[in-house]
Image (cartoon, one colour):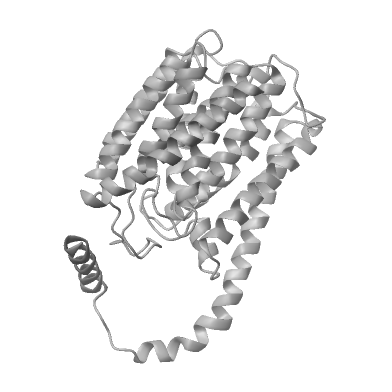
Length: 386
């Protein structure tokens, strides 16, 4: 446990002490996120290079404290992390085409699946399937990793949310791997938790910095790797988590990742049903819908983190009913929660928005694009004067 504390604190301190310098350089060199898109919630310029600090803290603590004998796969994982770090940094600074980002993610996932041999080896009876052939195993692993990476990227929309969910995921896996006796993986998970908590000090509302793609891609990749390794390891080991025997690990993994996975699945499905590209940006994510209820960023993030913890508790409590049955229950409960949110939004719309519609129509028309350009120009002029 002492080593857990050292890894956690070292990652946290490296991140928390490096972020002020990153913020200073970002403003000095004008490396920040300008809210020019309508879907963006924040209204002022904020640096989006927090992922640089997260990666630095994670790399520092894992390299310094985790021996290769405890985690032989660490080298490949860090190499894959560097790939995502580089493309995330480029995207944060100058932009990058979605196709190139996707190709880099696939390459990083292939390295993990093939060289580190971290992959989904069995379906554990789901859909009538058990052991998977090597090509199918690698292909499924790459798909899962890319999906989770992008799910975390998409959920990073309000202050504290992606970081908070990342802390829940990494701390949960750190405890689970510790209970299984696999300390190397537990150390890696706690390193990510420490890095994210150090970042959250500056990301809680009002945020002083965002993690950007540099951070969200890394958090997604580590979360995916921990999930795949946990499923694979639990197939051959007995786990007793908090008094609950773990017999349906795929369902538990779904509960751990429920917010990013459900949000991405829901948004992509709605876009396809509306004959739109699933990759089209909009304001229909769960955090956007909570914001529309006039809740603060902090409250929205806490609600979603709390729901995540609730799903994990349910998954642990009902492990004995079987994997498929638990997956169905978790899916139905997620749909129920989303339906309740939809009802609340509709009630608010009827109560506040519709009665004010005639007044809104009488207001003078302005060009949103021109207003945004004027806003950005005024901010840049203030920075130049300072």
